[in-house]
Image (cartoon, rainbow, N blue to C red; front, side, top):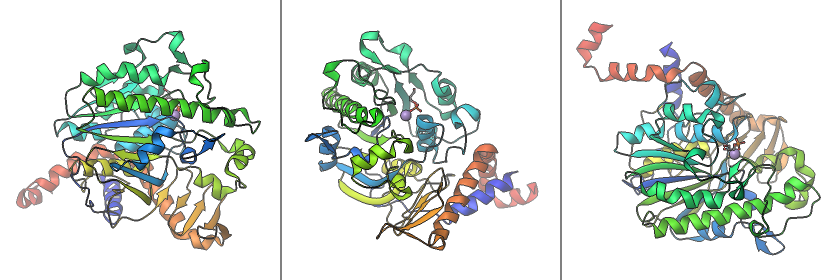
Length: 420
Ligand code: GP9
Ligand code: MN
């Protein structure tokens, strides 16, 4: 059994990116992860009738203390938001079908909250929906979270709800005293909700920009709810400053998954001013990633990466080595990492090529032309290898063998020989 884990480990040992110059730059700081519902990267700096959709995020990207990644992809599958949470906390892929949160919530894992607990961190998740949605109440125990502030801990009235639950602005407002109650340093995730399909708002005051007019209601409403969420982030950021929770904190804003599916390609081609081929569709799987902390040296990065890379990136920022971890991602800030993103459908993106998995087409990125599939063979195979190995870890619950192996490794040689 645990020879399977060795197979994974052997593969991963050839894939490492060394911690870069940002290692330890946020040591001892709180971590605030913000899951931005359905936010795709194309809305960044996009304007509707001259008005920015995400004015707060656009400004934050320009801040001298912000790192912005413009080639950052989501890796999620059917588990949507829950997949993004799983991927980010474990640096393992979600599953080809179903949601790990519901199918494998009893697995042995080595998630970020558990790792940071050993460094003296507390941990919490904040979300305005029922605690059992996506089996979160069960899975957060497995991931090692201390506290889950869900709908029951918020004052949720119809007046301040829309769609799935509490609106983002009151959600963040009510979260502030809860954050203040946490023991520092903390590792936290805030999961927004209002910018969720079918992108509806129920108060005129919440509609801060016009809709677009492609005639596709989903696409047209998308910009309005995105604008509302952006406003909630702005208010939250300011409130954290006012509450004295800013100075010692690193903020990680990330999009959880796409919001506009390929069923809306006609309207999207109008929005993007280009035909949506498998190439553009794959590029639309980019989601925003902004890492911000006072004192951090900001930069715009064109590094190609994905959610799977966040765990080592964050742990390295906090000054925690990860070389013995079973993780499929690499530190986005490492200098020698391979520039690649692998999506759950088998798509893969490198600097030179883009392989669109579902359509089995290969593109040269520089010309954006379709090229012979052999050009993508290398990244296509790498994607298959990684997804298969990660699936083995999850389906086989292989991390339960990790501690055993580590004990063997740390046993003095003679004793080890006797054991064998
Ligand atoms: C539900 C929210 C949305 O609580 O996280 O989930 P999604 O449908 O985006 O996976
Ligand atoms: Mn979501």
